[in-house]
Image (cartoon, rainbow, N blue to C red):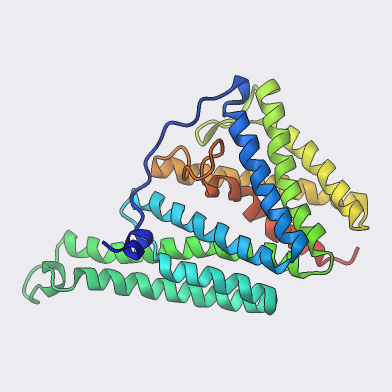
Length: 312
């Protein structure tokens, strides 16, 4: 197996023991804080020195998250077409930077089409010459024939989900960076989910009593949601004030981001539960995988972008 082949077909993700937790945090705080500091420093550096470098950061993060997602889906026998997804991710981000929202959406549609076609063709080639493909017409159709064809549809559908969830949603971060005052707007995009997660975590571990969705995410509580809401509303008001916007609009932005970030976090929890995983990956010590950090940021990006289009 060549290096490229191994890279494009990651093995099924395995559950690994997390780093030892410290205190009531439920995670290894020194590792979590250290990794967060490195990530934030890298993002800020790309924005301060030259905004176009941020496009490269987005592409690398999305491609890494896609690789994690491919390994997670491999647990269920689902093969993500990583090559067209990686090429499409770069194309979506670059067109978002150079051509704007219309160009990014066109690149997204092209990526989806390429991934669906790739999934069907790749599966058909893998089954070419097998008894499922070469059976004479007088051989009765069996469940095995149907299963082989369903697998192509499953792969194609999963590729559409991956292209939408990662490169398409991430393109809104690039669109923000390309705007006037883009650095401040991207910082706002990251500040809101960070405030949401931090506020929810602090209140949740100290006051959390009533589970929000115990069957999906046992640790998420209504008290934690209230903490997230307060922290995000405050962060939104402060960020929009810095951008010369009204405080009430910033508060509304924070509230909207809390709602969508919570739904995004629960959605990823549902996906991980279905795949039998605790974390999507282990690339970020103390956090899990890239997908585990990007979930709330990705779903928040379109909300922040839409708010920047409103003339306050």
